[in-house]
Length: 340
Image 1 (cartoon, rainbow, N blue to C red):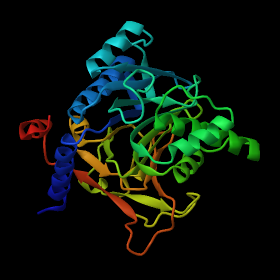
Image 2 (cartoon, helix red, strand yellow):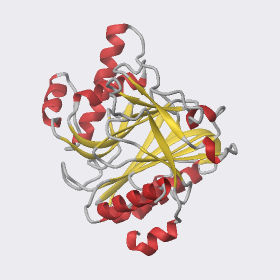
Image 3 (tube, helix red, strand yellow):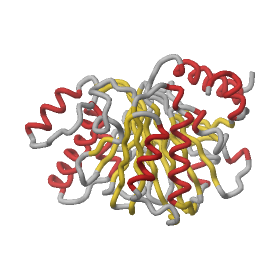
């Protein structure tokens, strides 16, 4: 069995397994130096969520930019079509507006902490200013202790979710680093501190009005896949692997110096990225996918370049890169197998 077909089989196995166990669905669409109308972006986000409906959910939400410093959040109970109607009804998005750079995130929620309502749906936010917004699959086991600490610091909570605790923890550490250093901290530094503080199993996608067009994805236990669609024609050999940066502060050198590191070949980036809980939401856009492994932190910067980071130094038995898999299947094959 080839490496590529093995990767596809693993992804299909995970897809089938998740179908039998209700879990939240994560989807994100990032376009860099790739012009899209807001209507197109909204359609991609909605269709991405619809591909994840099989996972079971009770509410849905998404975030799209009014402009890079002002993030709009839409949340609704019920199915994805009801969320779509809500977005249309509120009429806050100019569908004809075209943007060359944009990052949108979307989510289907299966309630674990708190009732089924709009407030508890995702994305969750650090405040009404949306300094940090989060979508999340999984459970944070120490959220109650963190929540109590934040409440003592004056933070007010609107939802009953563990996810809101994470969003507010982002703001707490951002303010802490800014006050202690007198300068604006890096997005990755804030999120790395958050991840080192929380406990549990999760997949996160973080977005921030303070860091326009940047996104961070983190995984521990819950599935998360990255799809890459590049406008520049690249050979199959170009789609080889991505180096991983090791070291607690992220300043460590990559474990390897791969000639075929795809992240370095997209220069300047004319690229679209798709992050999802499942390949079913990605495969209609691209067949180039990459497994995000446990404890990986993936940072997409404002120009569209991305890097994989790990907190700890590299161990002798640990891979120094993430291989890119070419899926040898179509969306129709997943549907015919009963995975729709």
